[in-house]
Length: 451
Image 1 (cartoon, rainbow, N blue to C red):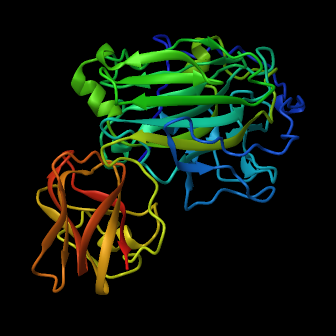
Image 2: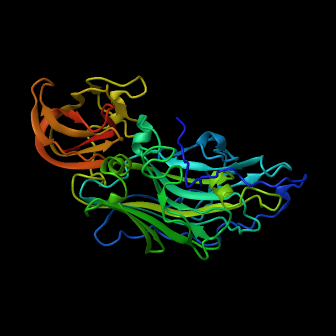
Image 3: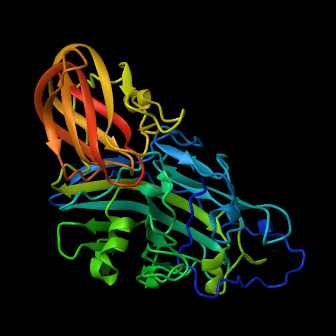
């Protein structure tokens, strides 16, 4: 499924590309040099938060990404719905770790036509579990350097750090599934734009395809140095809020009551997955008079130091898994149903956060693991995809037929849940009795801990 980003397209989205002679863009030397200093460590959690997940890109020089954690989005930019003209690849010419603790996305040009022949990179997290539980807060943060270009040689450059709602991966359409753009800049303007996309397209409560956003906010030095970009989704306050930060300063806040309650909940109150990309051309640069020209340099790069997700708050939300051995990993796993052959029950206990079990679209449904022997159980973890359980029980059994409930809720919030329980049994199951969406139940991973 193509993951869409129609970010901040102005009402007039025609690109402003001048008629050009046969001048080769790649003849211009790129001004984005490789990072020259060792990367910084991932920042300690802000006060009250705990670290949920991070990556500081410590791979060897000129190596690709860990595909257990990241996935490459490849293919023509035209498939993303934004008018981009590059082709996204998984080549280390376009996407690589530099051996100094950075991920680099590099846009390259070949040929003589400035509006074709571009390649670049776009990656997203395998996990779609980063979100704020009810009553909690999530913070997505990254330190990076925008491409070192300017308004003379950077027309068409479109770097972005953003996230899409996990329901998109389960078939909920954009923009209703939600998109939060943490950083966008275009044409080397030394700016940052923060935006929420929601509702329907075109128009709707979020004025799509422009979205509701900060507008252009000055970002001095963001082309020539590393800066800190973050967003917080706060479900602990009423109304809920999304807050955008640049170098620790809150430059834009969007309250829940800017749109109706249903639109907000559908777009915001669920997990997300994180994306980086370096696009070329498209509606957003075009709306500001951009689009690659003969003066646009080849080789501009976005250098990413680290990325982290922090959480605080209640509600069985997005927390790290407990330490110790996962008794369920690799053990025989069965389910009441599966959505299709690619979402088998065993995918929830294979230790791979990029595979998942999903059920038929009805209630109730269950997922059951055979531990092979009776164990005392003190924690259960559930890493939900967007289609999570609102009401479910954790149950144990010694024979696989008679069940004892050791945990129950009717207000599940999805995300990554770590549940403290007390029980014993050879068999452990998640018994879902009310879905949160019109789809089935879907778990990236189901973990059982104890002795």
